[in-house]
Amino acid sequence: MTEPKPDDKPRPRMVKPPSEDVPAPSGSDTPPDRAAPEAAAPLQRPRMVQPPAAKAARATAGARPTARPAPGRPRDGAPRRGRPAPARKKSPVPLVLGGLGLVVVVVVIVAILASGGDGKKSGPADPGTPAAAATPGTAATPSGAGPAAAARNVEDQVDPLIERREELRRRRAVAESVDDLHKLAVWCKQNALVDEMKEIAALVLEKKSDHSDAHRLLGHKEFPGDHPDYQDKWLSPAEYAKAMAAEKDYQQRLKDDPRFAKMEATIRAAKYQYLRDVPHVAVREWPYVLFVEDFGTNERNEYYGAEKADQVRAFWRHLRATFPGMVKNEPELPFKVIVFKDAASYNRFNSGQHAGSGSGGTTSRARAHFSLATKFVYYYEKEAAGSSFDAETTLGVLFHECTHQLLNWLRPAQNEASPSMWFEEAFAEYIGAVKKTGKYEKDESGVDRMTFEISRVNKYRLPHVQQMMELKHIFSLPTMFQCRTYDEANSTFRIQFGKAGDHGMLLLYSQGWSFVYFCMNEPSGKYRDKMIAYIEKDAAGESFGYETMCECFGLGQRAEEWAPIEREWQAYVRRLQPDGTLKERK
Image (cartoon, rainbow, N blue to C red; front, top):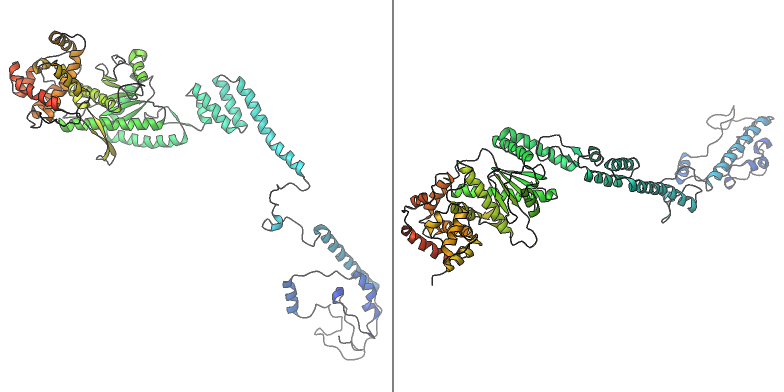
């Protein structure tokens, strides 16, 4: 360190931390009031630890900061030549003020160390630092809170929920009426018991399905449109969106398709006249509208509805393609079919328990029937336990009754049956011999449709007629053609073969089916056009029974003129097998 020259004024000394103090050289002439090491030592500031970046900045800046030069000293720090100024007596005020400043600094430093303990600044910890992370396996608790306080906090959160559910149990025990249950559901909503609210609102709807407030509690919306499948119904949000899309299509179809408007009018009339007490959905497949009883779920309703629509569509297309002269036009109004879910529903409806059904009545043995009074086909889908009917027979019954319905529509005198009762049942049995193929084909609209084999061998009628041929209990063809009623058939069978009962009626079904099938499928095809000509005349109401049959086949009314055809028919039926093939001749 360079000693000051006599003519220089001493520079104020900066107090440094102990580690950086350099003892003043001996013999220094520094004035005592400037040096005062003994007095300044207790007031020295503790050394502040600075980060490396600060140290680097300090090293780059050069020398330590110094005090402002004393008056009269050059600002550039160059020493001034001449005699040293005489030492002046300093006032004690600056020294006192400086000491007080140091005291304040020390107090601040002590306060900082007391608050942080390790010199770190206080305040909220950075959540991203390890120090802020909670110890694994422990729960964060308020400052000063121990395990007991944390347990009390959990109890404070659980107890109100337990109390609310206990209160709900007490209220539920006395809530019996619809109004009481509704009020209880509202109370659950007010007390944040959402699941309980839904459960109780559902109970309200079980007692009163049109309870609007209960529907609103469940988030249901009332359908505002005209679509008959959704009209006046409350729907869940998903159902509501589906219904509104259907409503848009419904309104457009009403504008674009006059047939659809007629169908909707038929649905409304049927709904209020016949189906008031039967929950159902309407399935549209022109020219049919099917009223499918509610099977319990939307999925099952849609499945059965789509399946029945495919069936009646296949029935209609087959008849129009096979007998174009018979089905020349489409009906102005759709054909109506009610599909019941089981025998119990079918019998309950037809027994007259449903006022105004006008079904004409039926026995429990029937699977379906066509009513001349209402023009409806009544049919049930599900087999009862122990029933002998299989799915194929069930389907055949539907086609059978739809044939009666179609023939009734085609004849001008629609309330009269065919003048040839044998043909009425024989033709229905011929069309009703149907089987699913298990295959699907796209229709003209690109929709996959179930396909069927129609007018195949009737597996129930074939063995019966073959047995009756072996017993020689067969009507001659002219005798069969002239049976106009079931009673005539039964009395004729009793007179010829000595057996009372319904044998004659059953024989008309089996024998009549076999003759129609023979004419339509005989290998040479020589009788096919003759049979079609008779079918078209009968359907048009132009048949006079036996007389018209003789005309179509080019034969007289004498029995012997039919003998050659009768021999061919019996030989064919005896060889016929259930798969439609013929046995080899012996």
